Amino acid sequence: MANAQTKWVPEHFIGGHPALDLANAVFNRRVPQPDNELLKSAGDVGNWFKASGLAGAREAEAVAGIAGRPFLKGIHAIREASARIFGLLIGEKPPAAEALGLLFECAAGGLTCGAIGLDGTRPKLAPARWQDPDAVLAVLAMLSIEGFFTLPRDRLRSCPRCGWLFLDTSRGGKRRWCSMRICGNREKVSRHRAHE
Ligand SMILES: [Zn+2]
Image (tube, rainbow, N blue to C red; front, side):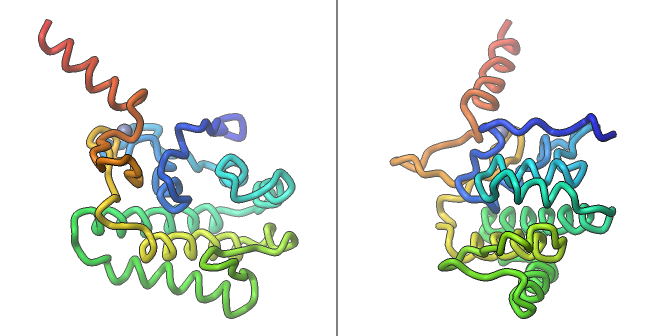
């Protein structure tokens, strides 16, 4: 189990905001695969923080050392609540109240007890707090909330092939795929095959 760690590559971080990258930490959101989960251990979570640039090596190691299933379950719950809300926003629907409530509750807990601070609108963790599961969960909840209220909704997209979310920063606003290299080409390949 411990040797099946996710190897994070730059393609995992094409969202344009950490909350979108977190939502994309599943292999395929549109058509879940048998081995769909990319955050399978606290080690995966720690490495994700490091690869995303949100944490340094020492902080990532502290996250990786957090023991117990509840932490991982909490990470998944925050990711799924966040992905659900972004999906609704893309569909021009209001965010689901219970999903939003879960994220506010988690973020508020971290803020009121001083586990997380704020740097502008971004959550900030003191170095010693990275080993605190509630503080790490609060950071992710706060990042998601920040994303809901700051990202331009008319630029939020969901890849039609894999369901990954991203912010379309192209000039014309016509970006369709999470990555031309991954999904754009796959689409081309399958279309070519259909004509053969
Ligand atoms: Zn895609």
